Length: 563
Image 1 (tube, rainbow, N blue to C red):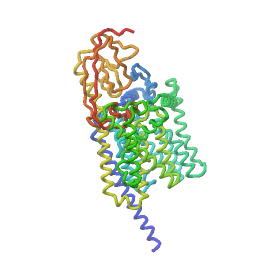
Image 2: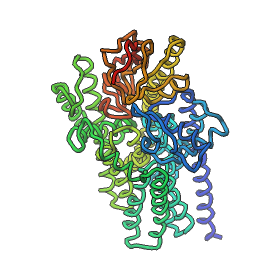
Image 3: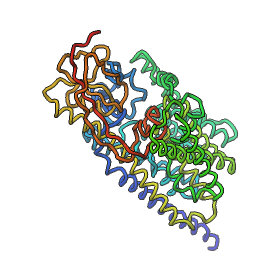
Image 4: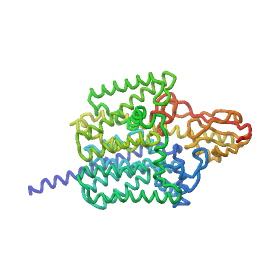
């Protein structure tokens, strides 16, 4: 009978742990739902229209997702030449829309599902890699980049959802030797890559992890053929459909665009650290728990030095520092703080690998470092969407750091709860600001349509603004064939992409419509340095300051266009 004691206790412990995990998982899902629900009615933004238009086309031609034209760069082009993302998220959108419709609310609700998947996958992975999976998951999802990325209908969150599950099942399959689990993981790698091309980096990541873990090659290597064959098929089929393989085409585009901070430079490196720190802002609010007083003092001094250097500089790379003292000071302080936090995340990752020196710490290190290198030096621009994959391993690394400090989690429970609340408030403020910015395109289009309903209206600019202008029957200017006549008006939003100055010899400003965005916080505004979706607008993923209203400049066409 005595021999049965440990077994019984072990079973009871397993049941208790399983029950606790279920409660924690339900809590995580509830938190994600509560955070996203208030924003589901927000307007489409940035590249959302490309995904929506592709999904609409898929419903009529599912075998030819990019077989239509779109004016995204100022002239009609095939969607296959415009898009730099694979179509899996668009197929999901087409399926979801066939059930719930095409409204913003319906599609945003549909895209909460991948966000929930990221929460579940991160929790399952964290349960294997640290002692506090609930904390690790909260540190990942209570970040500005998670909330902003989750309220779009782009492919980033779906890619990450498949990613974290692929890593989880690969680790599980490698440990158990179950072939079906490894096959499932390999299939999820392919799904991640067909959601967003960055997902294909799972192949070298998990290959290195497996070799380090097993210390030899094995039959598990064969399963990497599944995503490789799928991607080779995708390259071949798109080559046949569109005359170019879209996989390599996207890689060429990412490498060919020049950044205002340089491809590899001190400025570019620091801007990438700023984006990392700002996007994973939970690292700031737990700094007192993560670091010693000496390290905190060193970080504060470093941030102050960076701020001082920027205050004395006219530019960061080729990005001009604001002329007025208040705006310059605010921008410099934010760059100093978030750059320091970005460095702290990288240092934590290095320290974790240095102390553990095992396959799991190597996996986390390569995951974070690889994402950082891609977002900073490979992608055409540093942006929050490229930083997003960092959140899962960063949350786990921070939790592991706290695990290593005996009793700290319990002793500082109240302080940690307050820190998580503060992080949540910041993240909600950022997603609120992003929704306000997105809504300006919808509001501006509606005002223009109502005010000039009896006039032929053309417009420049794209993103969500184009979606709503075309929805109301207005047309994008074709730079090669403008087809403008006297009496027409042209609407130009300065905070937008692919726009040209209107020639003064045949156009004149009639008025400027002002639509308020966030008053003190923004994700996209060059005047204060916010550039969440592209660092061409600024070195910060979100920026605090005095935010000017978005402008929609109305031009009268006075004489026919002369070519």
